[in-house]
Image 1 (cartoon, one colour):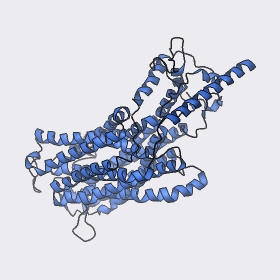
Image 2 (cartoon, rainbow, N blue to C red):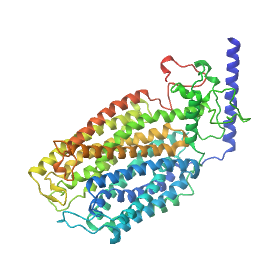
Image 3 (cartoon, rainbow, N blue to C red):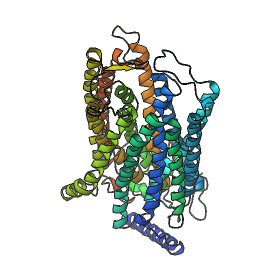
Image 4 (cartoon, rainbow, N blue to C red):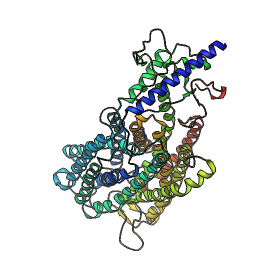
Length: 602
């Protein structure tokens, strides 16, 4: 045993020296990266701000545009918006793949920002030219002519261009901003943490401007002008972005990171009948690390050991002279396996995020219809808050809370917990899910009150919808404030979790995963609304979601969502206990270390 131990120690020492020499060679030969950090932020955040002013300035009020200008029914318009939002968010995975594999984040963002400008321009043209939208429907009309197939095709072409634009911009802009900081220095790490919070701060600020000024122009002045402003802002976004071209850190694409993950899964299935080595012999697994990989070397973990079979070397496996696998579809390195484990660990958390965002989707869709059938006057004036503008209170809540959280709460908590972020990312997300359930409970109480006043003390009629409740629309603010508070915890924590837990060459895909979760929420919301609308229409209590909300039971739908979020919180807590962070993981040990029995997972 002494000879075997000495031989194993000698082998490990040689491997360690080889790895260090390889890393030293790469460091010496590669050009030094000049990180500009916050100096590049005016261009990146400026581009993001104008891009969001343009995109949200159009998308925020599209629900009203489809029901008032294109004369579509509430349920039809809601489902179109949800499906478009879902498709746009799912397309980010394709955009991230193209960015990480072929174009790089800099070129992807530049091309897709310009494509978004073209999409907004096309949508504006549907409002400018009368033959591109149905004839105007008067307030007294009970029936209205819908759009022709040609009109819908032209509108959907604009949607398609926006989809292409968002596919590249959304997954790349956060990762591109984080690329500007040196992740190996303390100042760089703090810069990345603050960047995530300040990114969402400017993001919500842009949303607030869009949901107030731009939506007001669209609803009260002119749709042609109101849709033209976002198109012009998107053009400015293109200019601002390319102004900073000379100082950006531009990470080159390093091939398809998804291929590496698929190789691990395929090879693990191929070798599923092989016996894994004993715990103290894990050094026998294939331990090759590419000399110029941008990914940091990951320590070995004993979770998901079934995937380790992809790194078992058999007599049939060929090794190249440089130490790499002859056929990566027959043999994977333990580094590849650990990178795959990082992705697999995140997926259960991602599923929980899909259920969480259903609440946010309702505050962007059904709440607009609630506002339209409420008293939207401010005080005793004749000024009415546009229905779509109520979402600004969600953004305001988030905008006010994020700086307080970043500058006051995090440093305070850091002194007690010793954690860089004050609390862990999963704790932050769990708090947000709790607030989302509370938001739906408040929403249900408010809707019941709004409906009762609409039936007993109406103040007018909404054309083709029903009676307007005497309840002030300002009573919708508490649920929106809770939704904004929830977003500041869960959404920001979610994005940061994906960015930090994914391998470096998958950061665009990490960004797209957030939007894919939003896409799943949009599709799931559409499915829930359709099922509830169709099934409740046949019930004795009547349709929960009719065209006239006063004849429905939207409050029961909100109670159902609250119950769903409570169950989701329980599921999330179970996932959090099982989750292992990529960094500072007590169960992550070097290959030569032997795990405790409690650390071994399936």
